[in-house]
Image (spheres, rainbow, N blue to C red):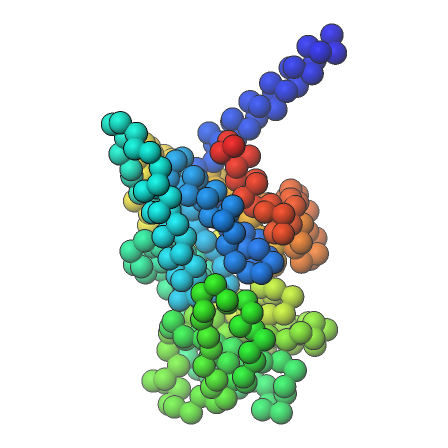
Length: 329
């Protein structure tokens, strides 16, 4: 009796995984603290998992990050090269044809969306130039504990030189430009600002600044922590979730996708997503199933208590869960 009960339980669990694979058709993931290693790189295990996900199972994948596009594009280029070389090394299958699967890049916490293969801009939401100018000069030049940053087009600007931040961008090789003050005419100069951010290793000080920003600009802009050392500011209502909704509205129907399945709501319901900080909260709660990283900001667990907590990024938790859900092993 025990044996038959165990077999029934095992069969139910297997069916549950199979049902999940059938129900979920999209994957979105944050990068730092999530799918990237603690060294802020995409591991070979993760890259191979994404290759099998997109090329073998034809599941669209979305990077959803606070990073800026040029930074992520370099990582994506390395990934696409790996995909190509791996595909060339595999033995040909008679009668088989390779079909590309859409991959997208959401950057600056949802302010910009690109097609990862073509570089086409799908969405962009800019901060009002006057507000961008005001916030960039919010802190006095004597304040050296907190740095002010700006994503201006494809460029990364910092108010002060802060080379220790480059450790997070080794794989892409992206660097910032030191711009102490914005000296040009605000009405003509500070356009195409996708994100402003404040960086500091002093978390209590950053907490106080975040409160001030919420009080002063919370009704005009989106203010959120993206990591333990960064408070990010985007245009009003810009989140990774809003970008995902827009993407699903614009995305062409996929092969074998019915008109009902191609709706924004159906695609969101068919998505699994991964994140580790407060800038991921909206995305994790709006998709069909969100997963919280074991190494996450504790406040994310408080805000999303209903979500499953998985292992850490040092344990390849995201790619292990992807392999489990889509039965890649």
